[in-house]
Length: 354
Image (cartoon, rainbow, N blue to C red; front, side, top):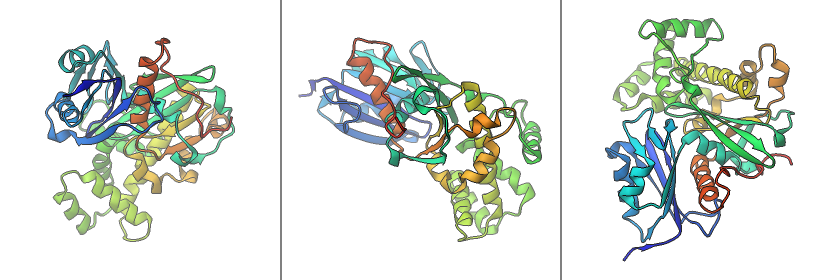
């Protein structure tokens, strides 16, 4: 018979996959979960079905839940941006017997997670020289969409703030990007940054680059055979970057993508004055590593009247793909194991100089 124990369910619910983990609340967010499982969202019509499968495979029923959602969370309700799922804190409590559920934006979870990263979890693009221990930090996360969030310092802890900055208007930086914008405006009245800087945007960028570059027959065939062309395009670009196969159109597609990413990182840094650093996270970022080279990235990142300030801001690539899940755990532990209900915070990041 299943028993009710002091356990916390944590989740990272993205557009394509959901990762759930179960923690013992007598442990800490840094502890290994009791169990963890990842599911492909395409196999489920709603989140409740995923949850039912996960809870049905163990003997521990959690009392509490903290779930990071890829979409805005308003009044305890979340409608996912790139998936037709809707979640409601009270409905989840009622249907699954939780004492309390917290739904948080997935970038809030990621922001919480970066405060627990170790030095091996990040790769610096720009070491910077700003005072990292007392300043705002921001997260930019290209995945299926483009997420943005930031952390406000409060003493030696941080408070995470959600954002939907990825849906702000795309502003082209050079002639190539101006042509891209004109290309997209033929078919739509508004172009957001997410529409040119996310996993869903890569096929669009590739189509634009196909006008300017020849598409090899072998790549065209692979794209036509693929359910999702994005991994095919990225892999072709990686092979080209490594000199294994010539494919200018894929390589230039990914360079364009990362140029836009660098420029948006600078926008986020200026809007939040994130002297503590910009963190490039999200499911897509680890695959972008061959194209996120410091010299080119910083050419697009450092610009304008505040170029000197931007040059001093640290920029990191987050390598740990569990960052959002661990952040949800951190948020949940602080919410459900302390009386300080505002304490959606975490300690000083251990990968930063003290």
